[in-house]
Length: 344
Image (cartoon, rainbow, N blue to C red; front, side, top):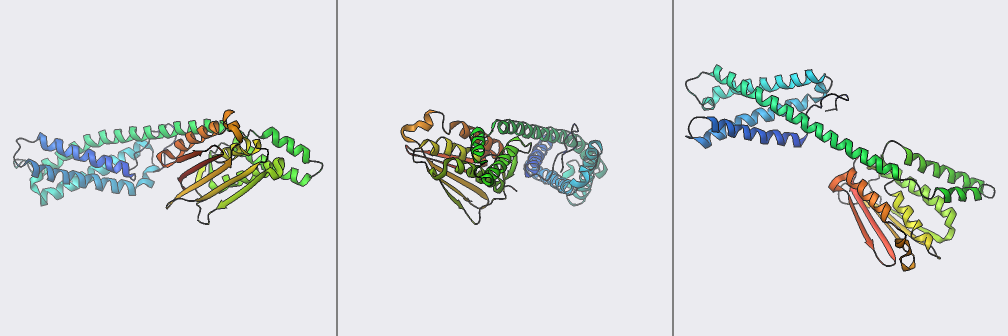
């Protein structure tokens, strides 16, 4: 179900498995309370089983109907949508009571009362239960939206902190190429513009393929500055899920640190190895490896730590427990592996 307009109370989404599981559990609790409220404990388990069956039939039928009607409900005002949900539940309760009174009269509990009394009693209980349930689901979904909004705000704050640290080096490189190699200077300007545009964009997500294009542009700029000291090994699997969406500038800062704090500080340079492939059925995996300068010079000055902490926080906010970040730090090399769900 689409979210309501800003400021309107969020409607419960009965298509979510979590919401259905929640109402099923609440239905079982209601059945237990109704059974305990009956006089005496004779045939307790039989009554509990029949009551639970009745309640769960109503719960699952209501969830199915309301899930099917989610597009219609989303176009109504919140008041009309809640009224429609309430009416649907009441109609299903009345229908189930009439069917149960005919097929399973034991569900009426009391032989002194007729079927009409059972219908009115169940409708009253359903009305109270529906009001409580809808209010609870509304508050629960509002809490979920608030959590997502806070996560998005934190992700945007982390995104705003990412600015290419190589900006001045890049500009100096471009300035040195303007007269001697104007075509390469123009290409470097375009690559730098793409990186800055992404860093300043409001949309904090794009595809893995777009992220890799930014990394290629960054490496082209660094290749102009480092020349033969920078060697690059690209390995992209044929089945790599490059259309999966990831936070923007998730990989580029790690590649930047691999060069700035690793390869660029070695007199003989080094080789950057980058692998992109599929992990499992529907996950992407990116592996970045680079040599470190002798005597741990890169780590002494901060090295990969700042970018790595930033990436870990952004992975957690974007993917939760499904995002993974593994680091292998040896005396002469650094390896980082990122993986996450290939969400379209």
